[in-house]
Image 1 (cartoon, rainbow, N blue to C red):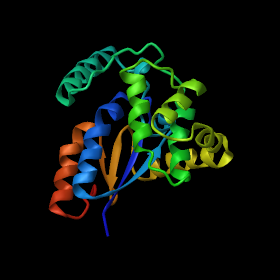
Image 2 (cartoon, rainbow, N blue to C red):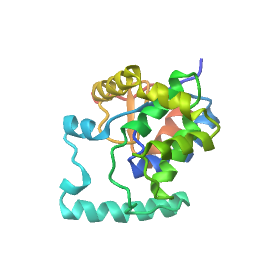
Image 3 (tube, helix red, strand yellow):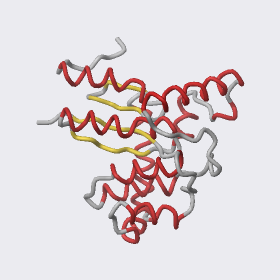
Length: 206
Protein backbone atom coordinates (compact mmCIF):
# COMPACT_ATOMS: atom_id res chain seq x y z
CA UNK A 1 0.00 0.00 0.00
CA UNK A 2 1.44 3.43 -0.91
CA UNK A 3 2.42 5.75 1.88
CA UNK A 4 0.37 8.89 2.37
CA UNK A 5 1.38 12.50 2.87
CA UNK A 6 -1.12 15.02 4.24
CA UNK A 7 -0.45 18.52 2.92
CA UNK A 8 -1.67 21.38 5.10
CA UNK A 9 -1.50 24.69 3.25
CA UNK A 10 -3.29 27.80 2.07
CA UNK A 11 -3.05 29.57 -1.27
CA UNK A 12 -2.26 32.72 0.70
CA UNK A 13 1.18 31.27 1.52
CA UNK A 14 4.16 32.07 -0.74
CA UNK A 15 6.00 29.11 0.73
CA UNK A 16 3.23 26.78 -0.44
CA UNK A 17 3.64 28.26 -3.91
CA UNK A 18 7.37 27.60 -3.90
CA UNK A 19 6.89 24.07 -2.61
CA UNK A 20 4.01 22.84 -4.74
CA UNK A 21 5.82 21.63 -7.83
CA UNK A 22 8.86 20.15 -6.05
CA UNK A 23 6.51 18.32 -3.72
CA UNK A 24 4.44 16.93 -6.58
CA UNK A 25 7.61 15.75 -8.31
CA UNK A 26 8.66 14.05 -5.08
CA UNK A 27 5.24 12.47 -4.60
CA UNK A 28 5.26 11.04 -8.11
CA UNK A 29 8.77 9.70 -7.68
CA UNK A 30 7.85 7.84 -4.51
CA UNK A 31 4.33 6.88 -5.55
CA UNK A 32 2.78 8.37 -2.43
CA UNK A 33 -0.88 9.17 -1.94
CA UNK A 34 -1.44 12.90 -1.38
CA UNK A 35 -4.23 14.27 0.79
CA UNK A 36 -4.67 18.03 0.28
CA UNK A 37 -5.89 19.73 3.45
CA UNK A 38 -6.36 23.49 2.99
CA UNK A 39 -6.56 25.30 6.32
CA UNK A 40 -7.58 28.77 7.53
CA UNK A 41 -3.99 29.78 8.16
CA UNK A 42 -4.56 32.78 10.42
CA UNK A 43 -6.63 30.60 12.73
CA UNK A 44 -3.84 28.02 12.82
CA UNK A 45 -1.40 30.81 13.66
CA UNK A 46 -3.67 32.05 16.44
CA UNK A 47 -3.77 28.63 18.06
CA UNK A 48 -0.08 27.77 17.69
CA UNK A 49 1.71 31.00 18.55
CA UNK A 50 2.25 32.27 15.02
CA UNK A 51 1.64 35.83 13.89
CA UNK A 52 0.52 37.47 10.66
CA UNK A 53 3.35 39.16 8.80
CA UNK A 54 2.34 42.69 9.82
CA UNK A 55 2.55 41.75 13.50
CA UNK A 56 6.02 40.24 13.34
CA UNK A 57 9.11 42.10 14.45
CA UNK A 58 10.65 44.23 11.67
CA UNK A 59 13.77 42.06 11.58
CA UNK A 60 11.64 38.96 10.99
CA UNK A 61 9.69 40.71 8.25
CA UNK A 62 12.87 41.78 6.48
CA UNK A 63 14.39 38.33 6.77
CA UNK A 64 11.27 36.77 5.25
CA UNK A 65 11.80 38.81 2.08
CA UNK A 66 15.45 37.74 1.90
CA UNK A 67 14.48 34.09 2.27
CA UNK A 68 11.76 34.40 -0.35
CA UNK A 69 14.30 35.79 -2.81
CA UNK A 70 16.74 32.98 -2.03
CA UNK A 71 14.19 30.23 -2.41
CA UNK A 72 12.54 31.67 -5.50
CA UNK A 73 15.98 31.63 -7.08
CA UNK A 74 16.65 28.09 -5.84
CA UNK A 75 13.30 26.86 -7.14
CA UNK A 76 13.69 28.80 -10.40
CA UNK A 77 10.25 30.33 -9.89
CA UNK A 78 9.29 33.95 -10.44
CA UNK A 79 7.78 35.39 -7.29
CA UNK A 80 6.32 38.83 -6.61
CA UNK A 81 7.23 39.73 -3.05
CA UNK A 82 4.34 42.15 -2.51
CA UNK A 83 1.48 41.11 -4.81
CA UNK A 84 -1.10 43.86 -5.08
CA UNK A 85 -4.04 41.78 -3.80
CA UNK A 86 -2.18 40.32 -0.82
CA UNK A 87 -3.09 39.82 1.96
CA UNK A 88 -6.59 38.63 1.14
CA UNK A 89 -9.21 36.28 2.50
CA UNK A 90 -8.28 32.88 1.02
CA UNK A 91 -11.34 31.02 2.25
CA UNK A 92 -13.11 30.62 -1.10
CA UNK A 93 -9.93 29.74 -2.96
CA UNK A 94 -8.98 27.18 -0.31
CA UNK A 95 -12.49 25.71 -0.22
CA UNK A 96 -12.42 25.31 -4.00
CA UNK A 97 -9.59 22.81 -3.52
CA UNK A 98 -11.67 21.03 -0.89
CA UNK A 99 -14.59 20.97 -3.34
CA UNK A 100 -12.51 19.30 -6.03
CA UNK A 101 -11.52 16.58 -3.61
CA UNK A 102 -15.15 16.11 -2.62
CA UNK A 103 -16.02 15.69 -6.29
CA UNK A 104 -13.45 12.90 -6.57
CA UNK A 105 -10.99 15.03 -8.54
CA UNK A 106 -7.31 15.71 -7.96
CA UNK A 107 -6.99 19.29 -6.62
CA UNK A 108 -3.27 19.50 -7.41
CA UNK A 109 -3.51 21.33 -10.77
CA UNK A 110 -5.84 23.89 -9.25
CA UNK A 111 -3.72 24.37 -6.12
CA UNK A 112 -0.61 24.97 -8.23
CA UNK A 113 -2.44 27.39 -10.54
CA UNK A 114 -4.14 29.25 -7.68
CA UNK A 115 -0.87 29.81 -5.86
CA UNK A 116 0.77 30.86 -9.10
CA UNK A 117 -2.11 33.28 -9.63
CA UNK A 118 -1.36 35.02 -6.35
CA UNK A 119 2.42 34.97 -6.35
CA UNK A 120 3.35 35.25 -10.04
CA UNK A 121 0.34 36.82 -11.73
CA UNK A 122 -1.03 39.14 -8.99
CA UNK A 123 -4.57 37.85 -9.37
CA UNK A 124 -7.23 38.50 -6.76
CA UNK A 125 -7.99 35.08 -5.32
CA UNK A 126 -10.66 36.53 -3.04
CA UNK A 127 -12.66 37.27 -6.20
CA UNK A 128 -15.14 34.57 -7.18
CA UNK A 129 -14.79 35.16 -10.91
CA UNK A 130 -11.01 34.85 -10.67
CA UNK A 131 -11.27 31.53 -8.83
CA UNK A 132 -13.75 30.35 -11.47
CA UNK A 133 -11.38 31.32 -14.27
CA UNK A 134 -8.52 29.38 -12.68
CA UNK A 135 -10.72 26.32 -12.22
CA UNK A 136 -11.85 26.49 -15.84
CA UNK A 137 -8.32 26.98 -17.13
CA UNK A 138 -7.32 23.76 -15.36
CA UNK A 139 -10.12 21.82 -16.99
CA UNK A 140 -12.56 21.75 -14.08
CA UNK A 141 -16.27 22.58 -14.08
CA UNK A 142 -16.09 25.86 -12.19
CA UNK A 143 -19.82 26.10 -11.53
CA UNK A 144 -19.94 22.63 -10.02
CA UNK A 145 -16.80 23.16 -7.94
CA UNK A 146 -17.92 26.53 -6.59
CA UNK A 147 -21.35 25.17 -5.74
CA UNK A 148 -19.68 22.53 -3.59
CA UNK A 149 -17.27 25.13 -2.16
CA UNK A 150 -20.24 27.23 -1.07
CA UNK A 151 -21.97 24.35 0.68
CA UNK A 152 -21.85 23.96 4.47
CA UNK A 153 -20.04 20.66 4.04
CA UNK A 154 -16.99 22.37 2.51
CA UNK A 155 -16.88 24.87 5.36
CA UNK A 156 -17.08 21.96 7.79
CA UNK A 157 -14.12 20.24 6.11
CA UNK A 158 -12.15 23.51 6.22
CA UNK A 159 -12.79 23.67 9.96
CA UNK A 160 -12.01 19.98 10.40
CA UNK A 161 -8.71 20.49 8.58
CA UNK A 162 -7.87 23.26 11.05
CA UNK A 163 -8.60 20.97 13.98
CA UNK A 164 -6.60 18.13 12.40
CA UNK A 165 -3.69 20.48 11.78
CA UNK A 166 -3.60 21.55 15.41
CA UNK A 167 -3.86 17.94 16.56
CA UNK A 168 -1.00 16.98 14.22
CA UNK A 169 1.26 19.77 15.58
CA UNK A 170 1.07 21.71 12.33
CA UNK A 171 1.65 25.43 12.73
CA UNK A 172 2.46 26.79 9.28
CA UNK A 173 2.02 26.44 5.53
CA UNK A 174 3.02 24.27 3.86
CA UNK A 175 3.34 21.37 6.25
CA UNK A 176 3.77 17.83 4.96
CA UNK A 177 2.78 15.11 7.41
CA UNK A 178 4.03 11.57 6.85
CA UNK A 179 2.57 9.05 9.28
CA UNK A 180 2.45 11.66 12.02
CA UNK A 181 5.86 13.20 11.35
CA UNK A 182 5.63 16.88 10.42
CA UNK A 183 7.92 18.41 7.81
CA UNK A 184 7.26 22.14 8.10
CA UNK A 185 8.06 24.28 5.12
CA UNK A 186 9.05 23.74 1.53
CA UNK A 187 12.67 23.91 2.68
CA UNK A 188 12.16 20.53 4.40
CA UNK A 189 11.27 18.68 1.22
CA UNK A 190 14.74 17.16 0.99
CA UNK A 191 14.22 15.64 4.43
CA UNK A 192 10.82 14.30 3.40
CA UNK A 193 12.41 12.84 0.27
CA UNK A 194 15.04 11.09 2.38
CA UNK A 195 12.44 9.74 4.81
CA UNK A 196 10.43 8.26 1.96
CA UNK A 197 13.49 6.84 0.24
CA UNK A 198 14.73 5.15 3.41
CA UNK A 199 11.37 3.68 4.34
CA UNK A 200 12.06 4.50 7.98
CA UNK A 201 9.32 4.91 10.52
CA UNK A 202 8.22 8.35 11.67
CA UNK A 203 10.25 10.38 14.13
CA UNK A 204 8.47 11.77 17.16
CA UNK A 205 9.27 14.43 19.71
CA UNK A 206 10.20 11.92 22.43
